[in-house]
Amino acid sequence: METIQEQEKIIGMPRIGDNAPAFNAITTQGEINFPEDYSGEWVILFSHPADFTPVCTSEFMTFAHLEDKFAKANCKLVGLSIDGLYSHIAWLRTIKEKIKFKGMKDIEVKFPLIEDISMEVAKKYGMIQPGESKTQAVRAVFFIDPKGIIRALIYYPLSLGRNFDEIYRALIAMQAADKFAIATPADWYPGDDVIVSPAGSCGVAEERMTATDELECEDWFFCTKKLDKEEVLKAIIKT
Ligand code: BEZ
Image (cartoon, rainbow, N blue to C red; front, side, top):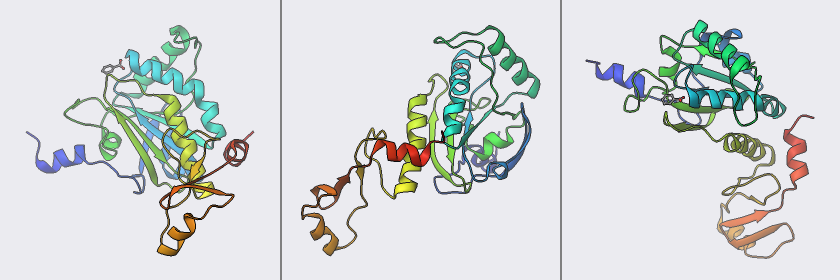
């Protein structure tokens, strides 16, 4: 029977705006000191339930296929599961040698995959959610910014493979929000109009009701402006 403290250690999870919990870990690409080794870069730290399972295999192949695309947006990938290093190595070799998925084959996973048999890292990041599984990590995705701050997190259950378009979209949208001091509306993609910060005073609210060339306001609290796709991509994507 676990004590309450033990249960809280398992269930507790970092929140948006927190510093990413630090750890050292063995990975398939050698040891890492997290998040220090990634200072100045965005990182997607993600967990998966187990090696040699089909949904996880499809996800790893997809992430590996997209690794360069994420790298061009200054973002590194780091995976984790509650498996040992040799299981990770054997699984990644099998993926490369044997597995085909959606036209992808001969896929080499070059980003680090953390071994976490002790569950130390998974517990720090709230990746063990006992209602779903006490022994396997759920499919967590942490977006960590260049200063080591957690900026977004998404959790999926064991049976549900992640949507990688959404993971990439969220990364680009957060970078655009930082670079252009804007917010992004529902389903935003580069080239769509962006949201300007809400009026913070009655005077600004009044101004927002006066037509300008730059802003389009539905009402004083809901104003958008154009942000050119090329401008967004030029600011974010390395060529
Ligand atoms: C999978 O990756 O296929 C999987 C892993 C754990 C539970 C269910 C599915």
